[in-house]
Length: 335
Image 1 (tube, rainbow, N blue to C red):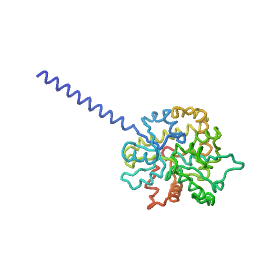
Image 2 (cartoon, rainbow, N blue to C red):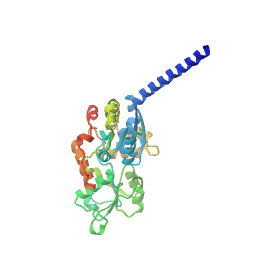
Image 3 (tube, helix red, strand yellow):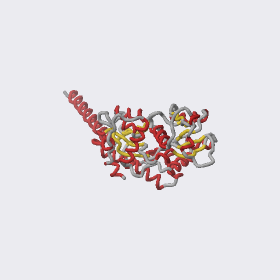
Image 4 (cartoon, rainbow, N blue to C red):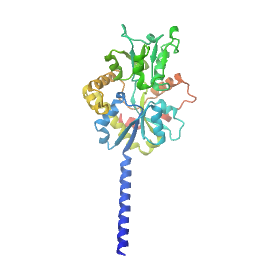
């Protein structure tokens, strides 16, 4: 009998302990956010500053970061439930508008195209888009926002995209993967390419090309990279979403308030193998084009510009509304 009581007591203690662990685990999970980013780039500096400076921890959040190989992969992670929040080009949110529990943009990180135009040769005058006439330029992946934005600004300049460069057409190449654009440019006969920092400046330092302008200068303000999540996440975990966006906003404020060298050092942990000097140059370049959002709310005007860019590339069969895909409730709280 005593033995039975002992076994029963042990079993009861085990059940209580297990229950406690489960409840504690559930409590901790409430403040865990699995973030998936479209790629790992200094262009997303406010996010990495928030991670490295402990701003998420200050908000009581535990954020894990995973990098994908494109917006499609990130969105798949979100829709499949392996990510809670994604940092993607908002075109992917538009394409996923018809899915059940569809993704919603709740904060914007970048407001300009982050790529720079690199020329094979040094220019004797200020670059303008008419200089692309009759040349080849290597852009981003077909269907991705970098390539669509580049096509948009080229065609808005009155130029024709095609492979007949002898007739003045602009050969916009979208057949090169993002990490291979630099090496393809060096070995091909292309006159121009677009690169993100610090790759663009590194190429110039090697003498393989010259940074002559930025795509963002010609595209103007567009919602280039945004934080998105399922609509159910915003409903059920609005507090965590607010804490998350507040930490990112602190990352932006830190960049705006500190000198570029201090910011570069804050980014160092996220970019092992990249020198502080390279990070500093990239920060300065992105500050110079006003790449990052001081206000994380996406405006309807910029959303409409995004739709215009997408439609210019390939007309949408139906256009989702701004109200369906953008929820600025939290962004307005942390602005």
